[in-house]
Image (cartoon, rainbow, N blue to C red):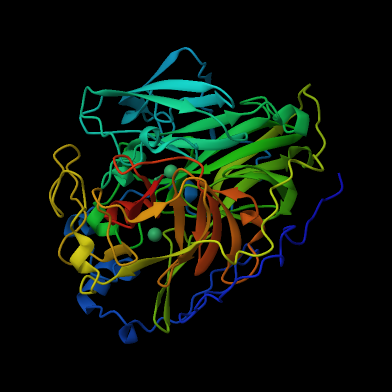
Length: 578
Ligand code: C2O
Ligand code: CU
Ligand code: CU
């Protein structure tokens, strides 16, 4: 099949912006489509803008710039699972080994029925033949994939069968604030809530997960996440593979460290607030060292990054090209050929991969990330030292039809010629030292029920906000559930300028979808050309957002960093749409 490439999004260069984005901070290197070595530079820690004690550096290494490493975390070295150390000696699955990948069951939620989704204890084996106790939806670690039809209203009864408070947020689903689950209601053990989900948006791969402030990192880690599929009946028309579990494969990407029993372990929130936890072992649909048997033809992979902090930097080991066909909010106007795709926490991407050319290993490059401190740039290493296999694919001949690569999908709405005259808001995401002015706000609304630094009676973990914790803020404010930060007019189209001076953040908002107008003042990256609800912002980005769902002050929408430790630590704000 002829490779279909597209050099630039169709809208490139068509927007003019009233003012350039101030860039007083250092720029990171451009995204490297190359899948190779690690660039490290500018390691002069002592001259940094934020004072760093030597003790903190010794205790925490590069991940403890603010001296946040708790003694307990430092003492408990996670067991390193041996399957992911290196990629050499990793055959291109000629003799396939690995744990067979399984897919969450696809469940149609029909109008007129009430589907019960219980958050409950479960048993799951992340590592082969080593079942451990977890929690999950519907009694499984990776809950059912709920499929909703456009034009219908689904009723889902969320039931809390756990011993911790919980709720469910429908990430990417465009529903009113009262059904969104982002801020409430929070269900005590034994309680339930009926969400009425009126589905009116194009087909897309969405997800659902727990969203209790201060607990999301732990809850998603422990298993409270599942897929949500919107179906509008167009997949067949567009020629996209659509047989679930055969040529339409959901791959939920996460990373974990395990103890000797095979139970995932997570450091206390306070120890990972600044950069988040990254595990040594990639897991797919909850399975480490996964092997997927796939038909020897074009297959659709629905990728979701449900990790807390890791950006998966994906490429096939043999560098084969693949085609991006959909982003968070649905299909692109045409497939985009890529060999490399970064996927940040919360983001989704649907890709078409041709397995007629042989077996493949999907790899992730280490998630080396940068912390910019004034003129200094600190490159923070990942726990992965090299490209690491996420999943192996073993193609097999089958009788299914070999679909060609679709030439066109659905036209994206044209971006405006100019954004002059549109309301603009600016959001600055900061990871600041505790002594910054922001600290005044840092602990006010840290959790709904507990003071900062308290031990959570449900999970035993220490909440964020210890005295020396970094201030995680948006526009100088840490999250407060009872404060409305922005008021948007229903139906309005606005430009939101997201500015990340310290490091990259995956910016997410509820109740609305965005188009990326620019990144660092330039045209968006290829993989950000579609409809998005989560955007990895390296330095700055301009988002064009139309607010089509209402949310009042009782159940406002939220915007936040989807690096879950940042979200739990307070990098979140509220907005109403009325
Ligand atoms: Cu996926 Cu506010 O979250
Ligand atoms: Cu969301
Ligand atoms: Cu962040």
